[in-house]
Length: 238
Image (cartoon, rainbow, N blue to C red):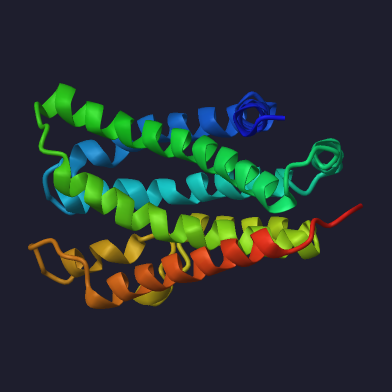
């Protein structure tokens, strides 16, 4: 069985699932809600298209995006997924290669939701404010979302390989931290809400703190190591 065929099969099963479509619709609906309630007014009297406001938008949206990512990860440890894996295992394809294809399908499904959420905001800037200088904003979005995504993805795959319920516990923790805005040290701030704290302290020149950058580097490194380890673990059987 060709790798491209397997990847397309896995990707289609993810993006066509009812759970994914529901979470995607909820995320996009929340995007439009944030534009009307938060972005258009700006964060603490800054411009709606300032990095401060865009980071507020991304940090507010990140809990939903991370929940979507973890839901995709949790799906990999269901009975149906193990059955599909058993079918693929009958082919000469190495188990680690099959895992990598599934990881790629999850990543693409998550990227679709992430990119659409960012496009919604950038299109709003262009249509309403005729603002199209998106370079800095895109960098902010990548820094806020990419490293913690790697961390959560790697953690979910390691935990799920041992016990699937642990992925749902991780999902619940992320949801609680995001919904209730649980304050975390800057270097542990998965949601990115601490980025705007200097603005509330009177600092108007936007910049990421060294602690925040260090935390993002650590997230990325730990996430990559976790993903590599999970690829080498034997496939758990039900």
